[in-house]
Length: 358
Image (tube, rainbow, N blue to C red; front, side):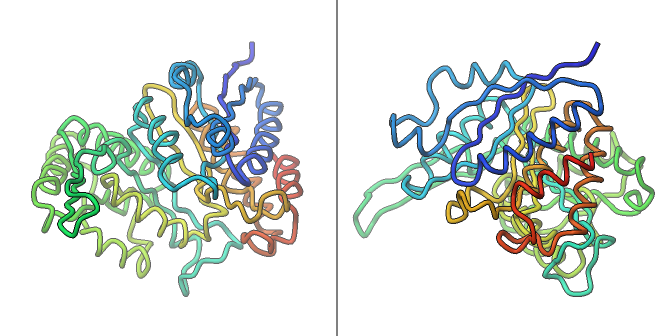
């Protein structure tokens, strides 16, 4: 009897519905070939709903989303909505409420995809950033006083407890073990903690001590390294081949994953997962809603297809996920570019080609 997965779909804003449609097209092809069933429920959370109703998420939303096997997200962001409203009211609320404490960001340069890094190819850019996803500055601790005066003061605090740090590090070490077993080239490289412990002496020290203690006691066979975040930004550009699994806190992870997206060929190919290893995870393309391309059928759906691939892999359908990635690479070899409007194909044509090759 085939396995059935129930998926919540949030197409979202701008080009989100367009790329989600192509991701679902590829998922349908994979489910047929690999003998499982996908059942979808659509949710209209996003800018249009907010402009119409004044609410970001209804009170029942988190409870409903928590009943699904996974969430497939298109994009959140609307030009007529003030920045921060949708991001905190939808994305952060879902991440925090469903305890999606891992942001998983593969940084892999595929064949025939351009990178701005001179003399670097797919053999040099193949690593993962694990960003702690529910702590740090994003928890919103702090406040403002004397607002609107010359003496205004604003604070926003980086707060971490040992449990939050440890569970993130545990995920990172376990992923490193799996990657080492998968490919000997990964085993040659360390797992790298990224922080700023020379200045952020309290939070940085907590992360570093926890990293060293866990590594020494539970994973002594794994090589370990540490980078200050500013140094990591330089080495991502100069020597991306040094990295395999990297792990960092929330704010630094938010910044360096965008750099990672650029060196792997741009936001059109960058996918990510908000992971709760014991619960409901959410997968999305990293490129945002790109409203200027809405309805033109020129947006690249590869990042959304990659998010769908990550979703299947997390659900346990590794064979289907691998088939999608292989099909993606074959289509990328045919494309003129991964940039919107310059692909040589329309959004739907790219989705059709990937689905046909799964």
